[in-house]
Image 1 (cartoon, rainbow, N blue to C red):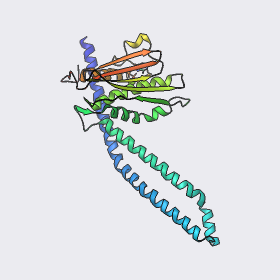
Image 2: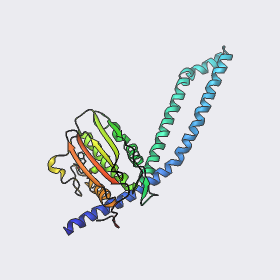
Image 3: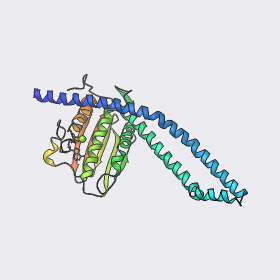
Image 4: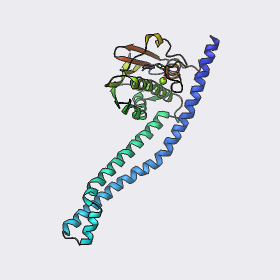
Length: 286
Ligand SMILES: Nc1ncnc2c1ncn2[C@@H]1O[C@H](COP(=O)(O)OP(=O)(O)O)[C@@H](O)[C@H]1O
Ligand SMILES: [Mg+2]
């Protein structure tokens, strides 16, 4: 029993150290990318405006000089002016979309790692869920060999702000959603769906649930999924710490509950949290 507790404490310690180092790295990279991407996006505004002005100018010239010299005609032909006129705005717009997307990812990474905000904060948990989904977006898009995407359904209720450790809570969202994606990756179905639901309950609690319509969890191993190092993934892929650490964060750190239900619709992990943590342990280690 003592040995088992030592084992668990060690697993938690290793994981916490790793996440903290990773959090610092993510936050540093996000910060470094934020500056250049801000000026790229800022310049794109001008680029779009100036390009439109130049194209309008070319139109005006063409209208006023309907008979250009042969040299000018050759130039117009060489530059494929008609194509350029329709394609240039499209290229600029798609560059812009890319820039906006990078900015959204950077924002989510900073929001997700929340390094500047250790300790208790009163936050909107939907933001944490959304940041996690943005970060995992590429894994949701083409999830299997047939490139079946995962449809994300959000049933967000009207939630009050929750006082919690937001960085740790985001880690839980990441673990649960990653597991759901993983289950859907192997599922032999076309309509892969991840459903995230939230609701306020009993005046002072909220529930958040993550459901996937994947293969479920065999009854024989359901008892063990929260054990440290329990994994059904191949060596080198899963470390079996995701659910163990998530359980510690929800139960020990926040005084909530984390439960798993499996039925013929798939797997649901349900988190119930008090609006303010009920039994914060002085140390994170049980
Ligand atoms: N949504 C899910 N669907 C099916 N099985 C799951 C799901 N979530 C967790 N599991 C099972 O629980 C095990 C432990 O999960 P976890 O602690 O996150 O470790 P890991 O993801 O590294 O395997 C997984 O290997 C898998 O067998
Ligand atoms: Mg996992």
